Length: 171
Image (cartoon, rainbow, N blue to C red; front, side, top):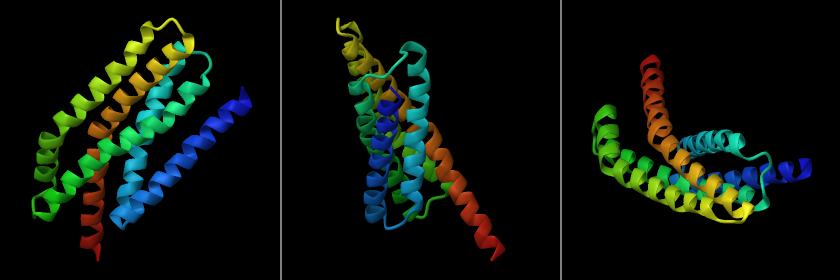
């Protein structure tokens, strides 16, 4: 079991590193990719916490879903960051940019996250324990990753803007 757990964390970590490198190449900066990875990690940790109440050990299939969660969390986050960056580049204020981004992309992200999560949760009625675990892990994970994207990521983006503003003032 211990080797399995270590292997799972290796896969999760390597996937995060790969996604981070791709995002750094795409955004041509390291801050946004770091914020994306932090938001995804919050959602993943929340999901693992909830999941640990229901299942004593992770199956191989449930563990591999960490890659799916990273992929979906990445997608949710990219919509949020792209919309926010677009609004900021138009010269809008931080608060207005975030409000308009959440109004424009929030419903789609929430709908996509909830429907995908509920779709996976239907696997809970399966007779196979592995399928039940996979459904629970994927469903809860997708919903929590979506929540982290809608709650944590905007907060981190605003904190980043305030920190940059304070740094620019002191220079």
